Image (cartoon, rainbow, N blue to C red; front, side, top):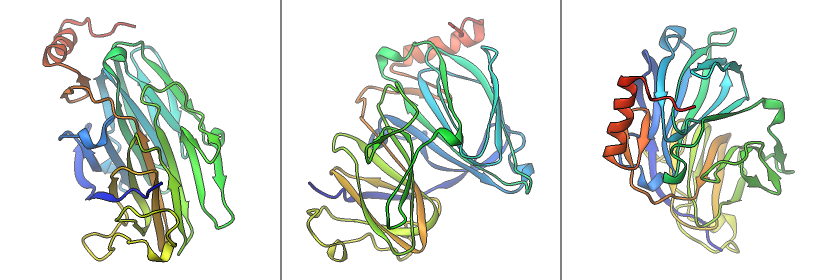
Length: 300
């Protein structure tokens, strides 16, 4: 067994999306083959309502799944199938756009005006690009949390971790989606199957991630950790992309660390992508936008 070395460290970049929402983008809209099957990760965290209330008005999706995880505030949503709802702090919405859906997402702040959440895009394999759209909406109370005596806590949204399975089921890429918290000064190794691409996104505290593949028998203090001197600090809004291995190793800083850990089996398929629509060929992409113009986009 081996520890996954750090392949790359990325700082999320300020981006405007939707009708003028200020957010940070960790990756997306470039060559995302190293993240396959994932396409994009946005961190929409803000305490200035004018910077997010315009939201994400009606727009289409096809060929992907969007995963929205809210930590503060709420997100109101509606779609072309007549669905309406609200996801609040701790809730997750896993939307399979499939053959096509038109929807809107409108963030609302909490009582102090604070809004925080993430949206992850996962690609669908060619065989499921035109599957029927569906939702899985999971309330915070239904997401299991596994803990250890050292204070490590892991919310299991999707996949299996330490013998606990997340409530999101039947997802094409069979992903692992975790919310991991470590207490100050703690070090842990966390299992991730070798055949998956994996990344961590730090959104609170700071820490070090192992930067060399070492046998698991090596004591924690002798592991070669990622240097945390600027600009390499694995701190707030840092994405750590891992290379191959069976485990990843993390050491929490003096304020602890909290991060998303996401892993999935790569599809290794061609990607034709423009805006909210992701297909396999340029011809399929052109057909999708032609259907939008002609009013034949929605199949369900």
